[in-house]
Structures are given as structure tokens and as C-alpha cells.
Amino acid sequence: MPTFLTPKEIIAELDRFVVGQDNAKRAVAIALRNRWRRKHVPEDIKEEIVPHNILMVGPTGVGKTEIAKRLAKLTSSPFIKVEATKFTEVGYVGRDVDSIIRDLMDISINLVRENMRKEVTEKATIAAEVKLIDAMVGENASEETKLKFYEKFRKGKMDGSEVEIKVADNPSMNLPTFDIPGMPGGQMGVLSIGDVLGKALGGQKTKTVKLNVKDAFEALLKEESDKLLDEEKVIRESTRLVENEGIVFIDEIDKIASRTASQGRGEVSREGVQRDLLPLLEGTVVTTKYGSVKTDHILFVASGAFHLAKPSDLLPELQGRLPIRVELNPLTEEDMVKILKDPAHSLPKQYTALLAVENVELEFSEDGLREIAKVATEINQEVENIGARRLHTIMEKLLEGVSFSATETPYAKVTVNRDYVVDNLTSLTKTHDLSKFIL
Image 1 (cartoon, rainbow, N blue to C red):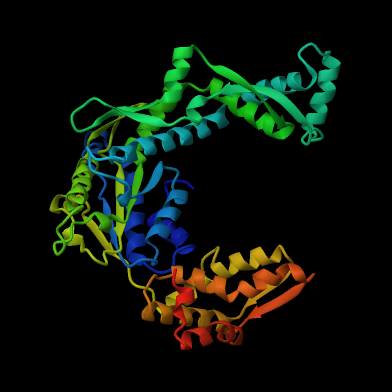
Image 2: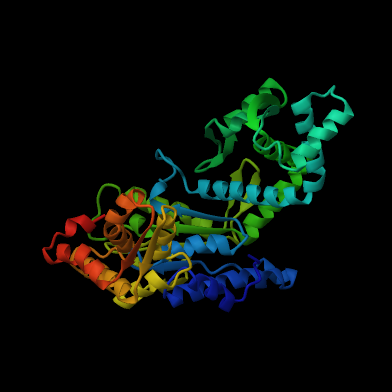
């Protein structure tokens, strides 16, 4: 999707998948549009314009993570979603926060490489076809034989056949990575064991694999495309993209907040992660295996439920680096109805598509959807409020019988109306047998 969407267009796209939460959508839409605006300002002021990082606060299951997922698809920018709880303070065993930028750089490299492959598709296709035909008939076969196989291949008649081809053996795809400490309080970057071994053994190794013709062509096309790419240009463009258009979504940030009422073991490490995040959000240089990456203009969006902690429990410096705070509202019963009806790929639509594979026609009536929403809201109020995630458990329980017996009849039609929902769910809630709905 193009990055020059207006804020209204961004919100309209998010509305297809996320119900309500207009404040969060507006904040995200403005932040995305500002990335585009910054591209068009005079050079002398461009460096001074930094993104306004966002903190989304709201209970679980109201759409924080869903907004992040849709953001990734909305923008062609490098995007990464991480959980704050996965990181540890520098000096402790675990991942340090600089690895966020390294991973973002890897994502950017893949994005740029994919786009650049499209530019060389024509040349790469010719080279891949030549290699494939040689593998099928042998390099010494006559031109007439090669031409016959080529015509069969182009018509798709060879797709089911198998062929042995030689492809580059990339050990770095299968071996782990390790950090090389070198600077006080930081890492010198990440080297791949595969890269080290590859260089030590001298040059690129190949391996022989047996694939069907269609897959073999795809593998050869990718390899030939990569040969035509300028790796330095890929790295330059990837670095530029990360530095100017990168987006980092940090989920569960409330879990690393130091709760004033419970100072104890683990609090130091939590605070350490917050302190390590500060330079990333403020602007620093992170060393990656592709070179140095500046974080000054990367947009950071943090989110958390803040059930036990409060946003004010975060370090004051970290709060200052997340200047835009948006509150997400708890879901009402009416919101639950909209979640079941409005999104492009709502749960009822997903179950309808799944069961249609087994010739079961599933139909949801208006009163049926409203009853599902009512039950979900009641259970959230009585047990624990997990927001829209409650709908997954309820829908699974509601359609358990249909899903199990779908293979037994050649065709069946099931109408999920209020009576169906009452018969299958409400009796359980009335006897307070709520354990079946607890995740």
C-alpha cells in the first residue's frame, strides 16, 4: 500500500479490521502521514524533525496489537513488533534491546532485496530457464531437444516432474548467530557463524537438491536475481529505509514498569531494560552486521494494558520519549457485536469459510450474533476481562459439535440464531460453569 495515504484513508483502512478506538487510529494515522511530510521539507530542517513516539494504554483484547499488525500491512516501511518482556538489561543473560534494530535491519534488507529482484526479473528469468533446461536434458543435448523441453516447460506441462539442480549452499541460513562484545555497554554487531565458515573455506559452496520443476525454477530465479543485485546498493537503501521510515512496535511495555508498591527482585532488571530503551528512542547509533544504523528518526509505538502498573511507573525519561499518549476504551456489548459483523475477516466469516470446505453451510443471524456478544460480555465481567479474545473461545465452544461432525454428512446447513446460542452456551453460564471459557 502506498505511503502517501492521507490520515482519513489510513483510518478507513484500519476500520476494516479494528472496531472503535478512534483516538489510537488518529494518532497512528498522523504519525504515518508525518513520515511522508518530512520527506518533502527543505533539507536544512529535515534532520530536526523527529517522530513523536506513541504510548497506547488500554486493557487487553481491545485492539492494540491488532492495530500494530494492520500497520505492518498498511505501510511498505520496515516494521517490527517486539515484546518488552523478551529483553534483559545489558550484562544479563538474554537479548539486549539493540537486537531490535538489528532485526529491523534484516527485515529491511529482505524488503529491499525483494523490490530490487523485480527490477532484474527479465534477465534473471532467462538465466534461470537456461539452467533449468540444462539440468533437465543435460548441457550437451541438442538445441532441438532443449527447445522442445523449453516449450513444454513454458506451457506448464513439466511442473509435476522432478529435476536435480545445483543451488548455493548458504550455511548461515541454518546456523545460529552470536554477539561479539567489543565496546563498553554494547555489542560490536552480530556475525553469522555461517558467514565466518564460508569465508574461511573460500567462496560459495553449492549443493544438489531434487525438486519438482516449478519449485526448481523458483529457486533458480531467486538465485539468479540475487547475482544481478548490487549488494552495496541493497545495504545502502535498506539502511536509509530503516533510519527514515522504520517503525518499531513495543508491546507489553507495562510489564517492565517498576511498581512502586512492590520493589524487590527483578525490579533492577526491569528498570535496566527501560534505561537501555532510552537511547534507542532518543536517537543513537546501533552497530549491525550491515554497518551503523541511526535511530533518530525511527518511529516507536509502545503499548500496554497497565493493569498492575501505571504509565507513571515508567521511568520519567522514558515517559518523556513517548509524548503522545492515547487511551483505548474497554469493549462494550455493542462493540462486540460490531467485531463479529464489521471486520473484513471477522470470526463468523472465518468459520463459515472453514466449514464450507466440508460442505457445511454456516449462517449467522442478527439475534445470534447479539447473543454471542452478550455472553462474551457477561463472562468478561464475571471472570476476567480479556476483551475480544473471549470471542475466540466462545465461538470454538459454540461450533464444537458442528466442526466435529462436519465430515459425517455430504451437505448440511446450520443457522446460528439466538436459540442455537442459548441452547449451546447460556445454560453453562447460568450454572456458573465458566471454566470452559477461561483461556
